[in-house]
Amino acid sequence: MELIGADGVPRCSWGNSAPDYATYHDEEWGFPLRGESALFERVTLESFQSGLSWLVILRKRENFRRAFAGFDPERVAQFTDADVSGLLADASIVRNRAKIEAAVTNARATVELDQPLDELLWSFAPDPGSHRRPASMAEMPAVTPESKAMAKTLKKRGFTFVGPTTCYAMMQATGMVDDHVHGCFRAS
Image (cartoon, rainbow, N blue to C red; front, side):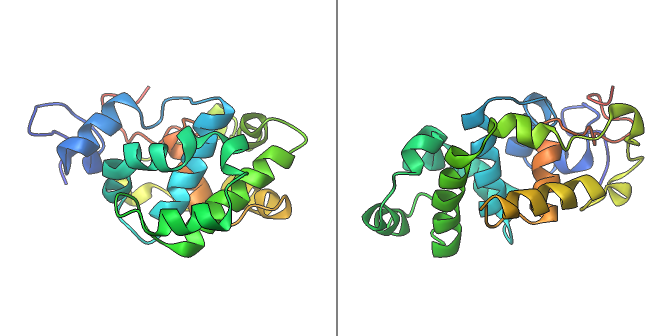
């Protein structure tokens, strides 16, 4: 795919594949994100994305926010079996029992952490000077040593559905790494 979108803006090629992607790429992807609810949302949504197109998740994000109490980990940690059943009946989100239960499990794990979630997650961000900007999408890794370490630590702390690929996607989305390709207007 070309770096130049139909709107004439040079961006990572995936950002040119749909208008929703262009907006997400230009206004959100790769921006440093902090805060427990914001990062819990990203961990949750990246987990839901596993095996699906991110576009599906992106287009349902407001429904996910409603269904998961604004991604307030304290509130989601209190979800019951009846809440899970209600979510399984909610056609406005992805209705996957394992992923829904993982969101509740991960909320409970977040509440039990001995440090804020954003501090824990950001502790795995590589030194910006050590991260090499990809020249093309083909050079973009799916997994890194940092994402493997993050996944391992999260699993030890009770999180589920957080493998190294999911963790790396979350690291990219939240600005822990800057994977805007050379030539993209967002590449710094």
